[in-house]
Amino acid sequence: MKKTIQVTMEAKGVTMETDKQEFALALKTWRLRQGLTQRQVAERFGVSRYTIMRAERAGDITWMMAYRLFAKLSEELKKEGEV
Image (cartoon, rainbow, N blue to C red; front, side, top):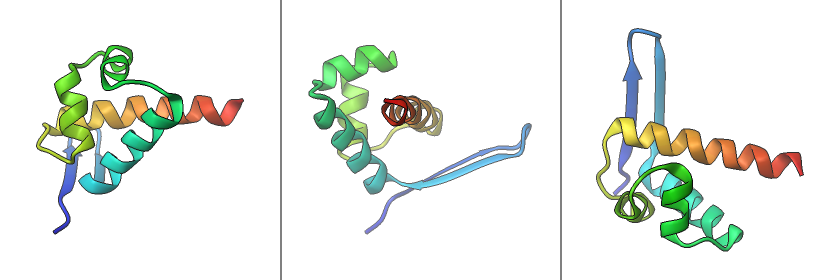
């Protein structure tokens, strides 16, 4: 069964929808490709290790945290593309 994260911020008209499983795989793949531990990613992203653990197993996280992690991962992936 797919789990979907849906984020809506009406004040600015922003909507984001992503599949939890897909995001979990993207986050873990990036972390392993970088050779980082969950703790190191948590420190880099400014969250707890447990948040990274929940995100990587597609567990429950708030929509605000999902957005924050998505934004941080996007920044890191952009950096990779600049190399």
